Length: 153
Ligand SMILES: [Zn+2]
Image (cartoon, rainbow, N blue to C red; front, top):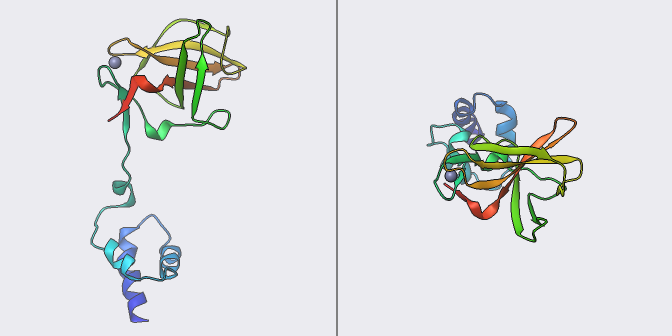
């Protein structure tokens, strides 16, 4: 079909890193071909359509981490815990964090994640307490950051 050839030759240079035949076959299975022609005017690659939101310190707007670093620990990203004083924290788990400093010793006391020691994580810019870094003896680590002390930029 002429239309199929046309779409193939247009899509191919837009996806230089992908296998063109696979891309073509998947798209040609779609019932509506208008969806294909809507994409062709966009000259940029697929990454440009993916908006990555930075996660910042709510108090000073310093960049802490990003949404791409969200991970699940024990099958959930968000956890709610109380510390020994009874203060309740809702935290989100993040793999890599680049805007925190750390203070105090590592401790396994009252840890919320068995097998992990915690250390207090603070904003590296304004020093507000943002959460904790959890690390295991096996070298696995992640951050639990207090949800309401962060915002999405
Ligand atoms: Zn801050």
